[in-house]
Image (cartoon, rainbow, N blue to C red; front, side, top):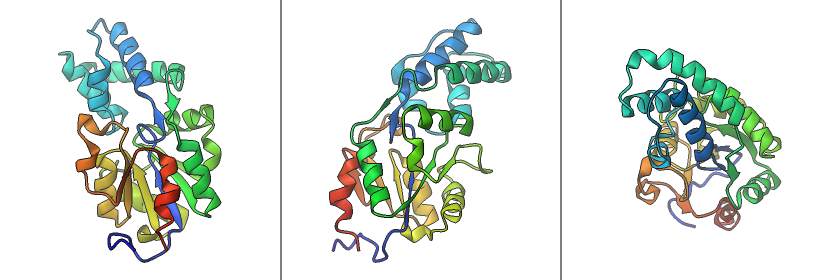
Length: 227
C-alpha cells in the first residue's frame, strides 16, 4: 500500500463540476461576450476565460470587467445580463469529458455516496448536470452560493461531508485545480486531481494530491489499491 493512501475505507466522494466533469469554457465565453456586447465593451478570448474560471461566476465577471477596462460600477448591470445569457446558453457549448460517466458509475457501484460541489451558482449547476445526463449520479448538488464561503475555503467541503454523513477523512475530493486541493487539504479530505482541467492556466501536476489522473475512469484501477 502506498504510504500516501489513508488507511480508512472511503464512504463518499465530492466531485467538482467545471473542468472536472464538463468542459464548460465555451458556455462561459459565449455568455461573457454576449454580456460585454450588451454593455458596449470589448470581447474576451477563450484563453483569458480558461485562466480565470474556478473561483465563482462573480469573480469571473469582476475579473472580466477589469480585464476590458470597464468601470467597476457596471458590475450589477453586467451581473444581471450575464446571468440571463448564461442560463440561456447553459450546456449548449459544453461537453462531458471522456471517462467521466464511467468513473462516476464505478464510484456508485462501489457504494460511495456522491455529491457535486462547485463554485458555479446552483441555478447554473443543477440544469447543466441534468442536460448532460449527470444529475442521477449525485445525492447532493451544492453551488458556490450554497454556503457562506466558496472553495478554496474548506467550509463547503465540510458542509458537504455533513450532508453526505461522511467523515472528511473518508470522503474523496475529485477536482481539477489548486482551489479543490487547498479546500480538501484544509478540510482533511483526501484529494485527486484530473490533468485536463483549467487550474488558472497552470500545470495541475505541480499541485499536491494523492494522484493526478488523465481520465476519471482511471479511478477504478487507482482505487483498487484503497482498503
